[in-house]
Amino acid sequence: MNSISNNFTSIEQVTNQFLDNKTKGAGSAATFNGLSFGDLLSQKANPVPANSTLKFSKHATARLGERDISLSAEQSLRLNQGVEMASEKGIKDSLVLVDSLAFIVNVPNQTVITAMDSTQAQENIYTNIDGAVIA
Image (cartoon, rainbow, N blue to C red):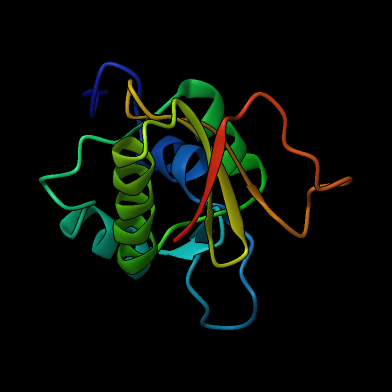
């Protein structure tokens, strides 16, 4: 059998790896992390603006997936603007609030350290920050 890539030998393996095969009803498309194929395609076609240098740490990326958090393009822009405002004020480690989402960002490194939905924060206590921005 010819291999599709180095990691997969069949389309079923690709499907099982990247798509949640549970459908919401007859005729519904499969989803991955709650996003349809169209949503994923849109995210890849319209990534975070090119002038953005904001990175997500491995930990933050894992938290986004675990907590089923996805950012719209508008929210990503506001997050970047919040980090810019924190930088202008000399904040090193900032809490950036975007709608109901909370991000801890290391401003000098332009790196999101962790992310959560503020409704999921058990005690609503944020430590090791020296400033907060509501974007």
